[in-house]
Length: 532
Image 1 (cartoon, rainbow, N blue to C red):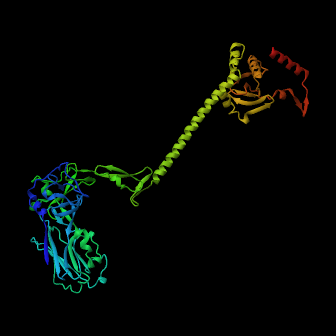
Image 2 (image 1 turned 135 degrees about the horizontal axis):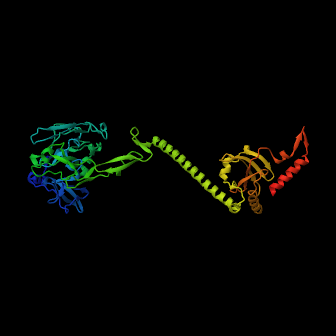
Image 3 (image 1 turned 45 degrees about the vertical axis):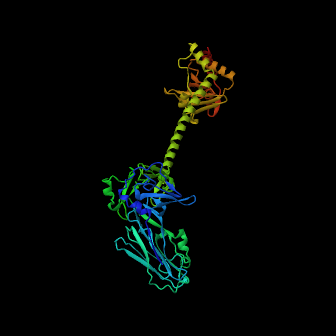
């Protein structure tokens, strides 16, 4: 028994008028966008004024209670891809089987999509034949003269292997581009009497290559035909086509027919690679539906973390850019953000410079603070050592020497080279005497007293005031004092002839001689004169 089936039905009725159907630029918001588990994306649509044209019009049918599936014509639709320009449908499997009477039943299919927007994909589909001693062929009866096929043979099941489709139990062959119609035939000339007891059916179908994986069970059982109730997935390349007057991008952009379908301002036209017509794609860096106004929107590429490890992604209009975090730089060799040694060196040097600068600032501030503290401390000592009292005594006493003054500590430090030990000219129980040179080049003797008690300080001030009044050639002249230290300092005229002890003693041949009465009397008279 032999049966031939033509896969047309509603599809043909709809498509015959496709070239005259007006295009729908914007589908109604009320249009159904999903049927069952399948998204129906424009230019495809369900219902009136929901698709670009009649050829893209689908129906949503209840195949069993509560279960809905989409159909293009009478072919079940599995999914739609706008990006790839493909749809997947279920294609009936042609069979050639022994019946219960031992005779062969042949059920073959023809699929006519020549007037639709679709063409059978030459990239994704293979004409697949399963059986033992089977010759099946595929042909186009629409005048192209195309015909092809393959032979599948086997003597027993032990010769077969799962996953292998190279002629033993299974064979496959490619199809040409632009194919919109095909029919299947089986050659009855093969002798199948030797294999009917273990392989009673042969199958042939144009189907998606990646959806098929040969199993030896397909030879001895009806498992292959039972899958999807005698159907297999097939991939169709669709495009914007207008019947026999299909236009490419150049012609369509001229919009001569008013049906240019790339409505999004961020879309571009791409010529179909399988037959006449064109597709619309969103610009690179955009996604969405290019067939709708404002359907393409910018992609946030940074969501997929496209930048190398350690990088920072910055989304831009239509793209993105990567940058490395601070302290890292991009390495083309490793395609990663690596440690930036030059930056580390720069930061180190800058840090070192900054530290040195801060150290210098701290040193300057410390010196300034020390000077301020010293200045305050000197003022404190000046008040403690009754400096104001001495100033008043000197100013009130008109008999005081004009050369008597209160020296600052800075003046005396400069005169004695900061009280260098090489300037010491005498030490005693009451203090130390330093030789100093004032700024006016006067050579002076500076005595650092050991007086500490406050009652002695007042006595010291009074003595200074009294000594400042004495001006006699036999009395060492007092130039002044310094009260800016804890221990007051006296500034005398420097005597280079030795000490009083040196002057009073008289040595001859190593023997100390006493002063004569004449010398003693002279000294007494002159001392009395000085005290008077």
